[in-house]
Image (tube, rainbow, N blue to C red):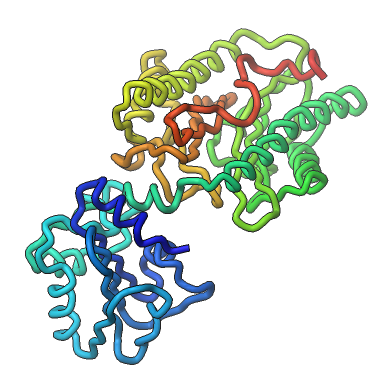
Length: 396
């Protein structure tokens, strides 16, 4: 539900004079979601909705689509000519110094940059400074309700137990047939999800040896997809309950098809695990001290551990992403590599920390989910942290 009072309180908290939400033919999906546009909405003309930090909001709509914002409070202005639109935009932001829009300086965060440069120029020409609405998007797109948090925790139970099923399936097939295909393990995990009332937007990743060294490997597409004794296996899986509005759990773990794990696997895993734990410690320290912490800071803390161990070139993606109703949500990402995410990590939000080292022979990733309590506590969900490579034949 659209909550004007909460949005205006956030504007005052972040020091913004207003939030100008703009969309043209679906160019700004974030604005559509914040404004609670009806399901299946398709507009053909530009519209604006201005929420001031104080006072009533105002609408600007085209003459042939005057009803597009009728579900929202506020006085309506109707334009026909482009000159009327520009004059009306100037009126909307009159007297404002800082106006938030879905904009990121230098396109440093393309997840937020949904407003085109020309529209930003137009608003700036009205005498105000356009600033990023990134923190507002995080607040209103990624803060979980109690019901959503509970759905995530239930999904976490399912994803956590899926690993034991996958490892046991591998062990059984190795002992009985001497080998198993990546795709067969993937299918077993999907069967587990279905039996427990979970769903996923795409299948899990099961990568043996060098296939796991491809961060976005597609199961069964490698040159060698047969898992045998002595092989190293990476499993990345994600799922949510089938209930509408439920939130994902997204975890990655690794195992070796052996009774004991060779040292060269253990050595790399320990670096990845130390980097993962440094990310959690960074977030914990910031919230304990009561200071803001950005997604970029967490990425730096994690990445420095891997770089200092000499594996920096083999960690080729961001540290983590927001997690919500989509696996890759619209909130703060743990990223200062691919993008410059200066958004704050907010209470009530959920994200992944998933460093990896991807070598030609094998890849190691350890992915966990982290929830920030409304009180500022830091909770790792999804079961116990993986502290060693799973010796699949030794444990299952």
